[in-house]
Length: 287
Image (cartoon, rainbow, N blue to C red; front, side, top):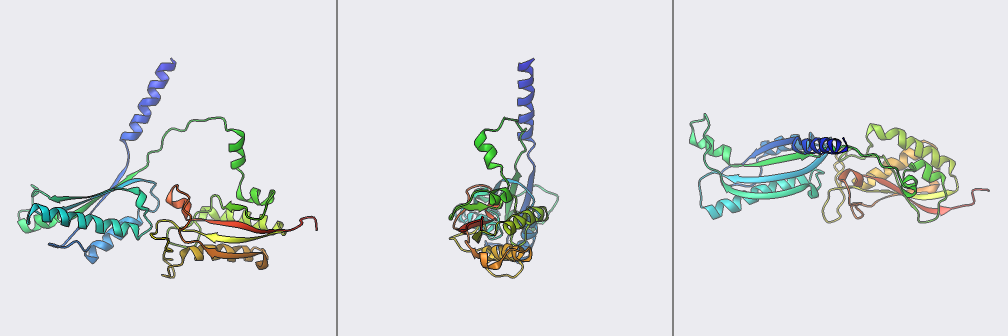
């Protein structure tokens, strides 16, 4: 009976792997060009915007040319087209760690389709194919938590109410920001309110609010889509600062600063769109 259950579970897992959801998109180019035409860029940005709520496993990008031109030339051009699409993804809050393959395939054989105009057929072959694969939800296995794991499950407000020392850093758990914006997602607002209440009660601590972003290069800050300024990490920290002040936290106890992308956590991109506080002073709570 036990062997039968194991076999059933393995079959369910295998089924999940082979039923991964994929999102595809094609971008078309002009003859001998790898610059993305404006209309095609707009179509691509619309496609990217629809991926914001997708838990992405991987992205592959394949570049192609038509049958005109030497093989060596077409290989270079197709790679340039693939690289151009990767650049657009990277500049629109898609982590480059998710892009697993960017490959120029050279020319495409003329497709056998109903279209008779060979020029139109070649136009359809001057393209980049994008395949976005979603992560597969694996069956959850219940395991009894260890003591140290239980301690890690403390909420942010519970951590604030606990024993704190100068230099302690508290990451705001379950506070997620909208991609490209300084405002939190709706499901995070109740948690942020609980944190504010805990900070109002802890009058003995002073702290710095640090804002972070994901998916940028060379430690540059990201662009705030609302203001169009490249200061998103600062804007996120100030958003939290203003929220706390509104909820009754004394402004003299806190300051805010943008950390850009200098300290990524090394996990999922959305976890780097975060705010955390660093304790700068702890007074005598008995006074």
